[in-house]
Length: 227
Image (cartoon, rainbow, N blue to C red; front, side, top):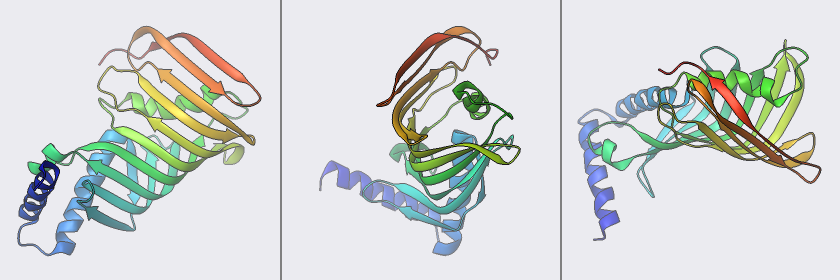
C-alpha cells in the first residue's frame, strides 16, 4: 500500500467514524451545513440556496454543492453558480474539522451593484473588495467560466464574460492577489491585481494586457486601520 493510499484509507475511516451510526442522508446534511458555514467564513459569501450536496474522497477529499445561490453580506454582490467545489485539507479532516485549500465557483453568474454613471475599474472593484477586507483570513477562490454583470439601479452598465480568475489564499493583514483572464467589450484580456488590506500606505498594482492595449498601474493605497 502506497503512502497516498494509506492516507486516503485513514481519511475514509475517520469520516465513517464521524458519521457514526446515523443515516447517510442525515450525516450528509450535517456535512453540508458545516461545509456551507466554513465556505462563508473563508470567502465572505453567504450561501442562500443549495440544490444538492455531494461528498467525495477520491482523488482528493472535496465537497461539491450544486446550483448554489450566494451573496455578500452587504448585498452589493450576488449571484449563482452551477457548482461550488470545496477542496478539503487532509489533516484537519482527521480531527473532524472542515478546512479548505481552495473553493471553486464553476460557471458563476455574478451581479455587482455599482454607482450610477461609473465607468472605471476602481469603482467596480471597490464594493466586493470592501467585503473581503472584513475577513481575517481567506481561502483561495477560483472562478471558472463566469460572467459578471455590473448594474446601476438594476440597469446593466457593462458585462464581463469568460471570467477565469484566481484569488490567492491570504492570512490576516496580507494583501489580496488576483490574476487570470476575462473578456471585456469583446476583447480577451489578461489581468492581475495586488490590493493592500491593512492600514498605512502600501503598494497597489493593476495590470491589463490585451491585443488592443497594455496597461500597468502602480501606486499606493491607504487601507483601513489595522485589526
